[in-house]
Image (tube, rainbow, N blue to C red; front, side, top):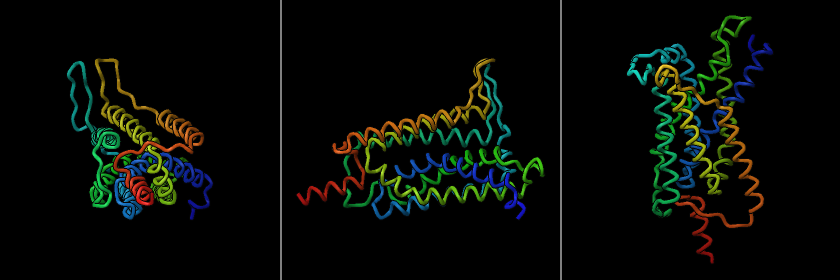
Length: 284
């Protein structure tokens, strides 16, 4: 009850909820791309499971804050003269997540533009179980990034400097739950819009490549990678990345508005669009 009557706690809750939603954009984009390859009736289930897994992972990590923070400690240091660093658990998880995101994004772009056509009357090329596994793997990385942001924003110091351990934990859990509820409400319309517009799909995959590069830089920064004695690897500020994403989307929305009467190029293995086209052809 003390948290509910504290104006600073409400400000922290609203701020963190907003940041969690912004940080969850990449999660929704990935969910849209992966679920778009499933049968139409399986797509909502994949999105719901993906977002609920994200919430579960983040809450579990919050209860293990001490363990999460301990992953910052280096367990393997090396110095080759021209290249040095210290590998930690956090750097491995985030760096590996960046590599996975780059691989997945480039593979999806290749598949949509150069891949072989697949029949939509049979089983979807990417089964529900395989989609959930991919979503779960990437959610681990996104959850680490989200939790590190939350820990940095909500102080667990004793009042009046902070909200105390219990208070800060409650604020972070409430922010995560609220952000997931908002994303659950908008995941369906966003996925439908992404899957119906091929240029948005390619833009979304391009954004995932940018996020993968950002994760690689952040993982390298956490590992204190250094070339020579002076050149350190720094993380990329998220503000630059999200500005590029929103500006690109704004330009594409203008293009869609101006050319709404033109037939878009059809990408391969787009279940929703392919089924619609087949029905239209049959009616013709």
